[in-house]
Length: 331
Image (tube, rainbow, N blue to C red; front, top):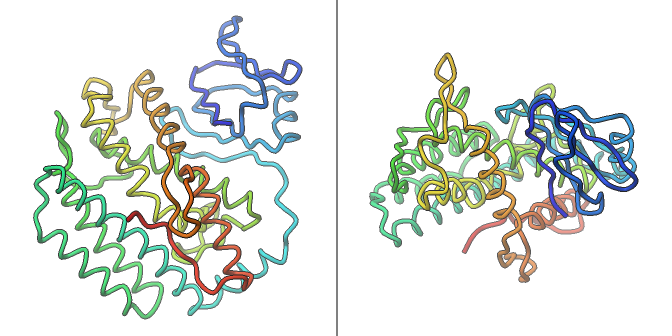
């Protein structure tokens, strides 16, 4: 099964028997069996009929709403799983400073190791990554183990990410440049792709967390903030370098996306053109379904499956079934 992305502005999504029919200006543009869909992602002005909404919820399919440019707005999801004991364990750990710091360190350790892997692999493939960047990230990895609390861990993560994104531009081979991470809004094509990729990753990690029965809003590394899926953001840290960053580099370096695929809004924000966004979404789904050998279970699993496995490993740790939470680390 796969996510159904809907970007045609003005489209209407209807239920016809056990199929999803997408209409635009009175004509059918998509007709898909429900069984092939596990998530619906809507960009901008798309209408979902009441019958279609009920069908999605009855079959456990969530509907995610983004702006036309890919900014997350919200989601419509089936009822949460019934494991309230798991959520109690999660809340207890989240309110415990030592337990939160321990888990936050795991998430950041996974992220930093994967950032290091991406840089070292790119350097082996010819990118001019200065050794000082590698050494500074290794230094941050050591500092992480001595960070006493969550605030200190956030500080180490910030230092490592700043170094990583200083080196990121050296991995870009085509007619793009990258001077550093700019988020709200992204002001160049590379940042635009990174922001869209992280939004997609966050929605998928939120789905994984919901499926397991954890509360996506109660995190350990990220502070609790109204409406923010802090736990999903925690768990996606280890996936950022290996899923989104490598995807962005591949889209640029392989010429899948070109500078003319972007446009600049009033105010300086840079976004993908609609047709180019479709290309990026196809690449994202392909990446998500590509397989790696899971380091804990030692079998081939797609990144999509790995997100679910990491959420389940966290749940098992919180309920005391396993002693440690092992982040997903590329080897």
